[in-house]
Image 1 (cartoon, rainbow, N blue to C red):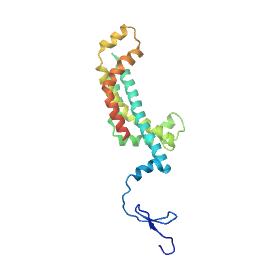
Image 2: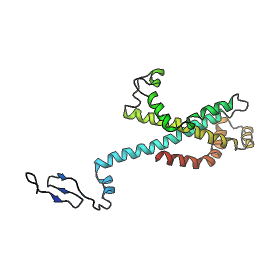
Image 3: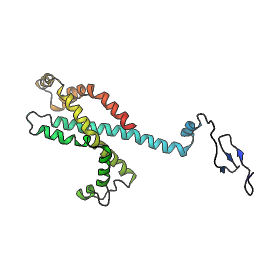
Image 4: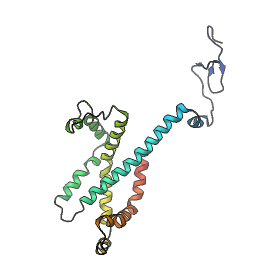
Length: 208
């Protein structure tokens, strides 16, 4: 009993509490077993934030990988044109985001996306709270993550495209296949054979 207060009793979980639930601090270490894990399911104050964070983390990892792969593949195909001038220069410029230190790139993008004096809002011109609105902040994170990641997939898909036998593409065109059919039935399946493990590894990295 505390003078002028209530009666505190051991709750068996590392602290003394009153009948009204008031806790006396500090407590002490005690074994709780799997209680913390069960609270994720049973306690709505923990379950709802946890599920929101988990769903967003999964969506962030998946969207970053898919968008980066799609952009890298598009650029690799666009630059894989025979006789294209300054091809090496274009590829070197597109790899710059991957070569920059990520921490420095994030600081630069934080300034570019500032809603008051950022260059992005002034050039578009729009008035978007990129960093100060919950939904727009998620969009900003995705855009910057894609910007940092797509050069990696550009290099990977460029090498994988060059390993696809040209005879298969020529045979498909002779048989009447259009560009989309060649891509969907020949290029993409053969590409995924080499790139699929890297997609999985990239997803795990972004999920972490």
